[in-house]
Length: 183
Image 1 (cartoon, rainbow, N blue to C red):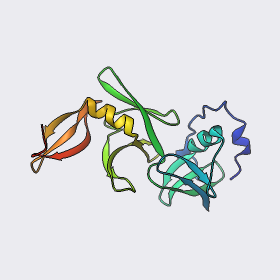
Image 2 (cartoon, one colour):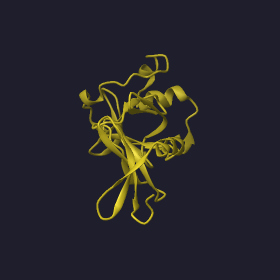
Image 3 (cartoon, one colour):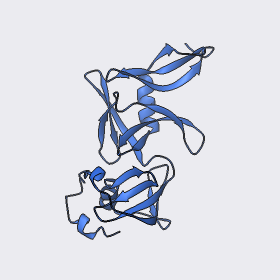
């Protein structure tokens, strides 16, 4: 992938380009892995330039072939162990929860950005949320516990209780507990 010309744009705060308007051919697989903890590896070696990681993260999207790095001229499939983004901060503003990824993406939990509890590669049930271009971010442990502190329970189906909160006019589920465990 020719990223030299992309590196000369911006000052490290990579803007998210309109990847949905780019339709280059898939050129193959790039030996790049985003680990579950958010660490980027190329050919097994960690990236040491945060500016480069931030730039490349701005070029990610979910395609039918998998998660791809996309430029106007090239598209390469990469490997992602879990979610390509981590939610590293949460704050409440005007009754809504706002989340921030490790790359600075900010989103409001609402109808377009709903928490979904899914299974991590380690087998844990942890919420994730859609960030952009079909890609999700996994809640970091600190953010998860911050949100749990403000959560309430609502009786759900099958004698279970949903644990969650309202944000953006939508119920956001952090997890489910059996009726015998409910407070």
